[in-house]
Amino acid sequence: MATTFPGATLGRWHDTPVGPHTQSMYQIAFPPALLASFLPWLMLNRDGLSILLHPGTGDAYADHIEHAVWLGSALPLRMNVLRKSRKTPSHS
Image (cartoon, rainbow, N blue to C red):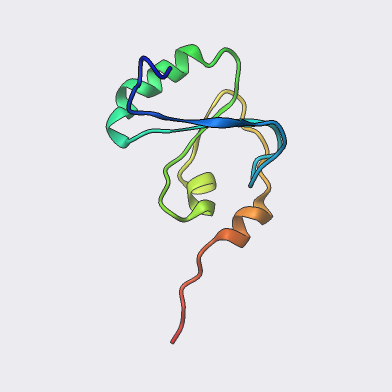
């Protein structure tokens, strides 16, 4: 993947649940310009894995729930973690 998509940033394996994820995971970040070529590659090469694809807007809840798509089976997420990270508007 790193050779085919040098603009992608490969993360590291998480063998235990991290953040809202309920099982092991691996993160890959990529710029929006790669979406048109990276998405079909993921679809054809996911080898049965479930993939959560979402933007990084700074609103973790919206990114993981409202704006996300799954390739393969959708996996449960820990919603309470996402809600706690949600930025709330300040009232002056």
